Image (cartoon, rainbow, N blue to C red):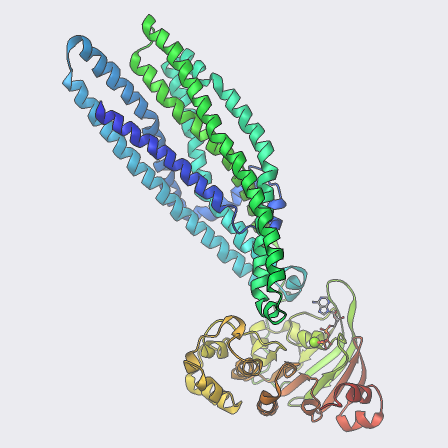
Length: 624
Ligand SMILES: Nc1ncnc2c1ncn2[C@@H]1O[C@H](COP(=O)(O)OP(=O)(O)OP(=O)(O)O)[C@@H](O)[C@H]1O
Ligand SMILES: [Mg+2]
């Protein structure tokens, strides 16, 4: 009997442990939410989301089958334990009092109990392990699909969509699904076990089963009421933590500005306000959560008391065996706890369905990389560009470029000038097909660029952006970003040519120095030089430099100017620059104003013309 008691204690401890695990999940679910996610109140079950999740799970169906087998074993062993105890009492203890011990039954009971415990351990392990393998793979696949899908979206898509929102979907929504997959499926097991226990109780003694379940409606009523009351509080906690996270993120990213303006105290004060709001909401939520455990305990004890009184009387009358009474008492514990856990997981389900909906909504956005061309152009390309009647507007419909006509013969350079907002960057973006013109066409060596294969086009046209984007990889990897096969000798030839070799060699690990996020551990000029090298290893026929010298400090300027001169040689080039020295030598200068070409010609011609160019020259370039 002592063995049986110890086993029972172990089982009870395990239940407590399970409850604690659920609490841990609950707490982690508060962290890292975004406000967008939390304000949405999803359905508790969304057939479409579940069906699509199942599609992701199908390739790993074997793990699903193992998980179900584990779950069935677990339910079976958990539901059978009280019955074995009943058997021990009615088959061994009670007869032993009257007729002496029946060791045969005792041995059988012990063997069954041992068997059930082994089954319980193995099936539980199988259940959790298989579920973990399944969910980890499904989530990895979902992340991969999202990454792949996002990479295929057009530049216009990223113009319309806030990056924070995309990140929220990729990170928080997937985390939400992870939580759901971890505990959601276990919850299905809990519900199945609940049904199983109720069925066994009715099978054993329908009347006592009704007595046991008499407090159940009260519990369910309290749970529903609790749900209603607690929902807004939990939403508040999550909204508050997302404000805290947003503030942390913004302040850490902008720490240089904070320090340079000495705003630490003010920022701390503002952060503290948000933090305090979250703290208060969390305390409120904790108070609400803490109410549940005593409620469940009280109802469990009330039910037990009822069963002891009614069942006890039945035992005296001889209509119920003592073992069955004990089994009923054990079943009561198993009955109430899952209801509490399920009701607390209600929000997990709801959020997971909303998250799943948002993830699939993102995956359903049609990849907008329009008109993937099929043609290969001339190899080697001549680099002859004709811009014919090009017009363009962004998604908002406001005309940005209007009837642009330019002929750029091979190996010539043109400069785009104009006031801010004139449309220079936009025109450059059309040339590298970040966007397609809304009217007219751009022709490379006689081919409309929308008919050319993208990979071909990107090998012919390289664009260096005003703010070079470097990845947190080594210098070498950044340079050969799009030409992995290139040898070190070739890389070095380019870097020496552009005058970048010396400073790279002075870095801690030379070409193998890992750059920080966006190349923060390099100066602007150095970043620019590396992005030049990246463009140059592609050996493009057409080079577009968008205000590439705007951010350069005067020390690096000469280096950059020299590098640019070398880069532009024998190439078709389009330069957008504010520095007069970069553009005076251009073969053709185009003056853009509100999306239209107002003047075109070389420096001498435009200067003498005394028009818009001369004005801009005097305005912008006089300090050169
Ligand atoms: N992604 C976008 N979505 C909507 N409108 C945009 C977008 N990018 C630019 N615009 C608008 O298009 C116009 C031209 O912008 P563009 O960036 O081409 O100017 P720019 O000549 O390069 O100016 P700057 O000299 O300041 O770089 C501006 O009015 C701008 O507001
Ligand atoms: Mg620009």
